Amino acid sequence: MTDALSRLLADRDWLMADGATGTTLFNMGLQSGDAPELWNTDHPDRIRTLYRGAVDAGSDIFLTNSFGGTAARLKLHDAQSRVGELNRSAAELGREVADAAGRPVVVAGSMGPTGEIMAPMGPLTHETAVEMFHEQAEGLKEGGADVLWVETISAPEEYRAAAEAARLAQMPWVGTMSFDTAGRTMMGVTSSDMVTLVGKLDHKPLAFGANCGVGASDLLRTVLGFSAMGPEIPVVAKGNAGIPKYVDGHIHYDGTPELMGQYAVLARDSGAKIIGGCCGTTPEHLRSMRAALESTPHGPRPTLEQIAEQLGGFSSASDGTGDAPVAQRPRRRRRG
Ligand SMILES: [Zn+2]
Image (tube, rainbow, N blue to C red):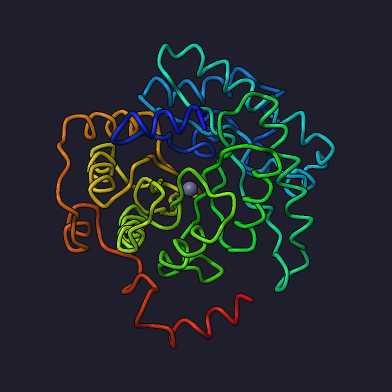
């Protein structure tokens, strides 16, 4: 396989992904409740600016503006008939920016969760989920995405459906989950569960890992959990810029560029090969991350204490693996 991401992974010790899409678009005037994907055709210049922001800050990989581009999500905006068009434009604009970068930059076709609960707990069947992801994947492929990038997934069933869709579209893919509930995903998946899940897939991702969640510290604890399992596939760390705080009616992330630089180095030392940011991560944060990664030699794997000391404490006492199953059970039942 000679896709662009595999080539970069083979050539380099680490790769830098991008930062926030939502945060950046809100700063450009997107209103909460609007579908960001509509901007791919309504405001293509703003989407080019979003992509260029990441590329100019040193990202080797950036995600397309298509996180909510499945029919299930677009239906909320009565745009379910435009899946092909909106995903294709997201990738075409990305292709344009990446090809003008003057160095290899990977266009990753972002695919977020459908927003529906999957069977057996909810109404969304495996077949329908595969069909929706496949429709989106074909649009991204047609627009020139190098790789599909599935993120913020909570349910193992949905991760498997996305893998199946990538296989049908004959596309390489990357898939990350969001560990936002005391070290687990909302559907109860732990870091070690995810390594096992990925290992059993027929169409394996080129890389897997964690994105978003709570703060950068929690995300690195999850990455250490992946590394402890000795995974064969490269690990992705895409953490938020600090901890989300509600200030004057909007969400503010308290992580400074300096802090995100430290986070990037700790992520690499924790075993991540692809390092980026998620919510709150601006091009300024990315620049600081790139500089820190380039100027700091590889160090030993950090301890949880070192992570907490540099980035702040964890949101929960445990990462959800191992010794707290009794405390977890009632919570999972309630969410189901
Ligand atoms: Zn996020």
